[in-house]
Image (tube, rainbow, N blue to C red; front, side, top):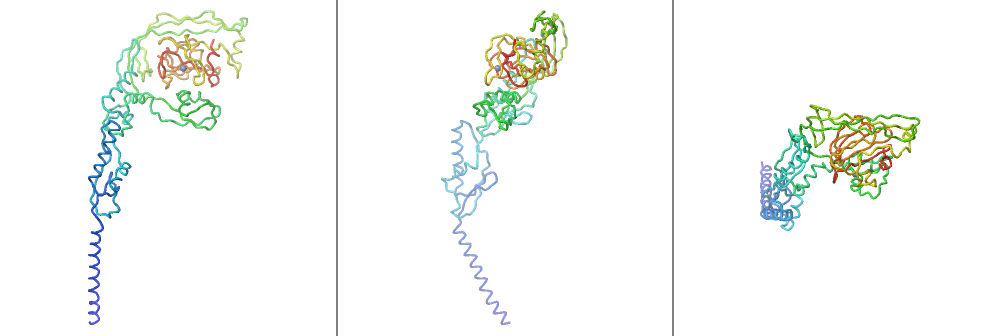
Length: 449
Ligand SMILES: [Zn+2]
């Protein structure tokens, strides 16, 4: 019993001391920690500071500065919240450091509109009216009908919407820039690894772009390439497709056939016995065009006005042998001119073609017989045709106004394949005429008659 009492005597003072310590600690805590503000950006506590008012003032000053810079009505993109806490004074961010710190944590957005195609934002503009104008401009330019055509229906292939959006000021495009972007497609550069035997012209051709553009994109000063070298290639493909349903009536050429008579006793040249001439037919049709190129055409009636006259050539035997001579078989006179006219651009570095100028609508003729390997819209080339002549030669006709042939079709020399125009990256009506021999570009003037 005595022992127990003694123990109790000792226990009482011990708990008193503990209580005293706790009270002292609490008093010290209250004395050392002061009231502070935790700044919470998008749900996460970023830092502590003394005054909520100073944070708000700093944010609105930052917004005003940015608005003066961009000339746009901006708003804060982030949710900024505050919470009252107790903290040691040394942990508080001083007022003069608030701006630098906030600049890393918040950003400002402008009220804008975005054009969405199939639920994907393709471009943002300042307001709905500008967006509407850009779309209308694109629609009317890419949905143009030709003479004698009636427009039945015009729409975008994609589901196109203009929606209110909040975007960072540098994402807002001017109407001109937005139009350019929709027309040429995303300028997302793709990488191309140079293969043995490649040249810039071939790479440009495979990627629907120009030698000059590849040189510019890669800061190339010469055309010498090393296998394994990486190049940025820029493809052009419109972001929107305008679908136009048309009904039309026109007079079309019926191309003449070419008959070759081989005469062993004739001199070693090609002689024209009968020049031949195209016939004419009046057709009515319904067509679906995508960005100005016929995707489908159905002829609803046809009436022949004039029959074609067959072209007859007399070929000396040796000429045939010369034309199929093999590796160095580039021979003058193997190709016919697709159209006659002044040359505005000659074959040179960066331009592996000749540009033959003429009036829009003038017939373009196949330089030789062969198969159509490509016909349609081809980036900067606009409406374009490539014919493989089967003897090592192929020819390209770019910037056409309309195309009369389709892929896989057999064409004969002199057949009307297209009409001259100014589609794609072109500054005026001309035929950009390229000649390839065994896959490499050659000067067309070396092969033309
Ligand atoms: Zn050209």
